[in-house]
Length: 450
Image (cartoon, rainbow, N blue to C red; front, side, top):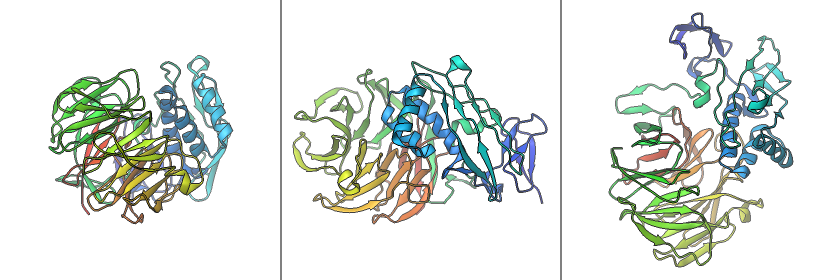
């Protein structure tokens, strides 16, 4: 028996009777991808990474290049295509210079069909940008996908896939049943209860929001990665005001304490501001240290990341209380260039190693407790980590390109959920155990069902 669904382009009725993962619309000729809940089988993987996610990753690699974050771009390229460090570095450098890069590999469609990708080019606009895939299979799959790479400065920006427009701006996720209180996640672990913001520079609009914080009164602070713009909202997402910090340097992290003081990491400094007005309150004395990330614990102390992975606990005046050296590499035997930090209500500290694709838990006294995750595609493993947060039950939430994965306090994998139409970056919980996520152009609030 066929199952109906709508064309994502024109809204016309489509029918799916199993088997293939695409259906041609008779009204506008769009090649529509069948929603996952209607698919009997959908396992189009290449080199262990889902093919459609590879396309999404290419967009993210381009954005990283545009932002000058070459290290992260190299790492994501390497993870996406399963190649070595030198090859990844060379490819990213070519892309940054507007030169073509060729990728050749094999991916599967279904359980017993495969397609050989003979040519995949990422070209600069001057040479006629395109990604071209050639191949054949029992499904007679032959695709030509045009991919404009719009450059700003020397970066790759927006991908437009002919016949796959829905997949350009969001990761395909399973449809879920509506809930009168909000949108239920795939797993039922959470439900979306609020979403605000859209792309732009007006009130309540964002260009690239990657960090979010909440004070003791429930006020919400969100900031774009570049441009120095910090916006303030009430607990219902109503825009209140905005203020500016240094616009010349990326805003790496924004955190807030219960009294409404906002801490912002820029240029290696931790700067303090009055949250509701943006009035500068001075820098945290660093003693020559350069910081990359910071969180505020419930007792008002700070935990910051220095030298890529050293965890430094500071008092409210910036005095060093304790330090955990090499929080990631000491346990993994692999170097770490970009660790992020979180802390729970008991004072346990979590180091999220973005280059190691794992989380490392430490007790309040600095003793190593456990390692969570690792690099891979299976549940409980990570690729291209973005953010970390801890809820009131000590459960650990870690976001990457697959979604937000949840672990218990011992590191046991529990569940995963996604943000519809967005990628999850910074995350924070309020006093009601509601999760707020910065999703580039929107802030999304989730309530927990479990």
